Amino acid sequence: MNITAANHRRPTWRVLALVLVAAIGIVVAGCGSGDESDTAASGEGNPTEQAFLEAMAPHHQSAVEMTDVAEERAEAPEIMEIADQIATTQEGELAQMEDIHERLFGAPLVPNPGAHEELGLSPEEAGAEHEDAALILEDADPFDEAFVDEMVPHHEGATAMAEAALPEMEDPEIRELAEGIVATQEEEIAEMNAFREEEYGAPVPESGGHESEAAPAEEEAPEEHGGGHSG
Image 1 (cartoon, rainbow, N blue to C red):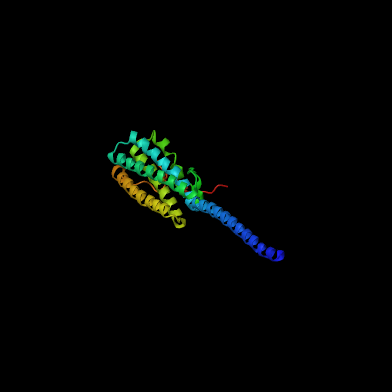
Image 2 (image 1 turned 45 degrees about the vertical axis):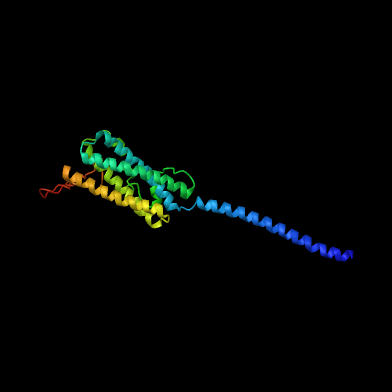
């Protein structure tokens, strides 16, 4: 009788032990999957998207600084209007970029002026040489011409960064942002060039600099007159 009772008792304890182990496993697995989902939620972005945000943020900030100078110094109504338009648009895009970075990477956006290199662009291609243009514009004369000559290549750098990043972008919101930057800034480039051509006789030179027009290249070797040979 004792043996039979013992035989009936053992399976009961084994079942209870197995149930306890299974319950612990479910709890542990649940905690693990929660951690993984939290990690995924804060790490959905890819390196190109992060480089784009880090590069475009300081680029936009410098454009807004240029419009601050224009608010004080612009003379033509067209320049006042486009400067106000640029400031409004890019301040809104800056706030959106900060939100996107927080969502995709789980951390605040830290501007990185050198991040254009991760997009495969040189400083010239990214318009980085115009990111201190606000300082130049403080004393520029005529101001309106200088503003256009700095802002057009600055815009061209922004569109180059957006176009370089778009093929690798996966998040729908950041794709829409980049496409909007290209469309808006190409339209503003056309407006500024039209103004410059009407007021100053030509659009912004290809090189983009306010004082960058090429010097006349006529200094060729003088023609030799007379056939004398020395020595």
